[in-house]
Amino acid sequence: MYESAVIGELPEQAAVSLPKLVIFDCDGVLVQSEEISLSVLIALLNSYAPDTVALDGSYYIERFRGRKIADCLREAEQVLDVRLDDQFETHFRVQALEALTHHLKATDGIVDVLENLDIAYCVASSAPRNKIEHCLRVAGLFSYFEGRIFSCYELGRWKPDPLVFLTACQAFNVDVTDAVVIEDSVTGVQAAVAANIKVLGFGSMDRHGKLADAGAVPFANMRELLTLIN
Image (cartoon, rainbow, N blue to C red):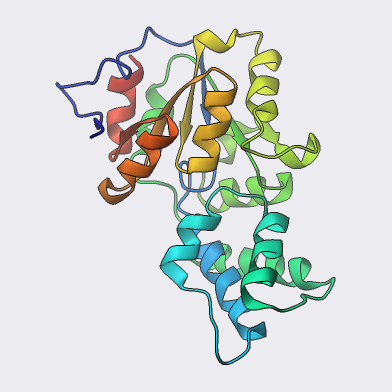
């Protein structure tokens, strides 16, 4: 069994001392982009697949969530027994950005959190900086995070490697014990655990078991976040 963070009945791990830094993931935490971009990816991959096999959308959205795209493509090539051309990732990113531009929304409640958060915060993502900035602009959140963006692509190491979280802590001169990470993916939770940073796992109730097993305290309503960290 695992415990979810519920207002008025917080598990012991969630009731942490007030942190000095909150590190948000972007996709799936600040903005609801994972399902959009990964649906584009899976549809594009399946267009390359033979008629006898295809990637199941719901399964691979969860499996690919939070991971480096290049790693997802390598796995898909093995599963589908295909060889993707050198322009596949570029083609995917163009289509994904177009879909995000038309359909992306900020996570419900996140603006209220950011407006009332009295401690330092930033975003640390496995996505390229241009995608992070694009998503934040489309969702109306860029002004909150300008100058506070950390991308794994600029470090050359991706979650579950903890470097992006450690880099954020170093930039803010905050010890890892005084930070908290907000993640939606198992990969991201694993990165926070590897960095020895407390982590809250944001997602629907049906995903709480996976997040808890990876080491997070799960919660489902973004508006609860201020209570959890305060």
